[in-house]
Length: 543
Image (cartoon, rainbow, N blue to C red; front, side):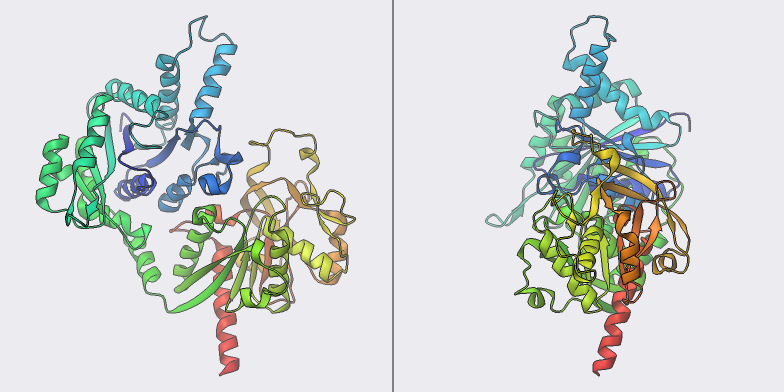
């Protein structure tokens, strides 16, 4: 193919319609037809990246192999496509302005007045085309964050308008995702919000090529005809996106509606191959028809917002399907766990996962949950801070070092079993300064984690400042907690486990970032399998 094609996904009427899922679904269909496809997200907020944002504010911060702290939509992209994303796949207004200001300071604009048009829009266009010019992709899908009409989105919309003109006919199209609400009082679907949204887009100089209409009820042929007429699109380009039972249904629903067919036609690309989605359908079948059920407690402190742990929840879906098990994740706020109600809070759990996080709030509740899992032989997985809490709990309750802690929580702890990394001690900036991205890890032969992975050399993504303090390693190992995974260059401990326990693993990295539909993460698959086996053994002994 001589030229990369571009698809822009915009949103109208309201936010949270699922542009990321639609973009990922279209990409999946195009990929399944043999086109090399990637997706990028343009976010209109002025933060340089979501790394400093509270999870309540923006959901989880997703980390790529190359250490970019990005929007959680990139997690959807990877989970659907099984293709790694990078720094180039997520661009924010903050990063755009930062780059333009740095260029101005260096004198690159030759004394010109720096303006939104052309300087900011040119920077946006450059960022959009980085992936396309790499030669690695036939089609680049770009999701524009926010809603058409937002002040923050205007420079992006203008950049897209210019780029569509520059690319020429059949090289770029716009998919506009909108809402067709159902008014129960009138008993009908209403098209006017969509008409206004398309009108707003056209006022910015952009014509929607495809309308994807989110709806709770079936859109009739008459309504499709009306939308096509008043929004100036072909009727076959009006695509219904009805509420689905799972996001993994959406690619198949979009295929039924012909979204990929219409997109290929408008891009003047061959529509020869039927999407090969057999593996996807097999996954969905296993997901929807489980043979067993387990309940796993997710112990965290941002549980009120499900998106805070999005990748963990999706990893359980992948691992559940791999084991033909329905994983019922019960979110438990660690701040609400106390010694008095610990048994009540943990009742009915077949497995316990202690989630990542930062700061002191809710820490003691996490430690109590770890202790409950350890003492009651409940399969346990600790991720990042969860692993650190497992180390602290073991030090306090097995080694008897009562005030053991992390220096993140207590600078003056006499037993700093978790300590600030040496290279972090002089850092004052918060954003982009942690240990980020993919790092190598060497697993010890004959350990549980080695058995889970089936190999000794692995690479996993990190996002943290504090580390296991090796000064306490020999003491812990003598008492029964072993370090089973190390960074081969630094010797830093990456994995801990308790061999005498049925299944007890803590990892400093974030395995959830690498789990996909096509490649469920072995740690989650192994954890769910262990939870199921333990439950079956318990039930058999009670029978």
